[in-house]
Length: 210
Image (cartoon, rainbow, N blue to C red):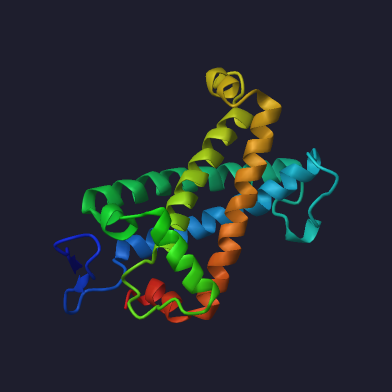
């Protein structure tokens, strides 16, 4: 646990012996990672069956083997991502972690931290504290996953979710929204893996908590 500071900009004060990441967070992180891998790779196989653009994904990096198998994997990943994501958000709200970790957030703060990162001068001394680029990235991916799930519902049950389909501009537009959200999620994961490679102790903290 962390003792809350008097103001949001003050450094977080660690409680002696407390883990950097609580157990519930680490479990949900790895379940989300599993769900994303299942959904993206099976989604590529589904895409290949009816491409939106003039390319397909190599079969070797897709999951399911055939369209029916890919759909089964995709739905399994979808429910895991949905329920785990709802529980993750609920726990962050209930524990106050959402406000502690991801706020405050400002354009000036993001620009300053991004500039420091591009110059290789962004400090990573305290793994408990997210810089403003990280805060923005994590909040963005939460929103992106929500869009991914909502657009997926339109593709899955277009008739039942007719209002949602119309709000998204129709079925074909929902397909493009879904593909774009998937591409942005994949880009986030790629950047996330690069950052883990640059700061490997962040991976150890997510595994062991310390």
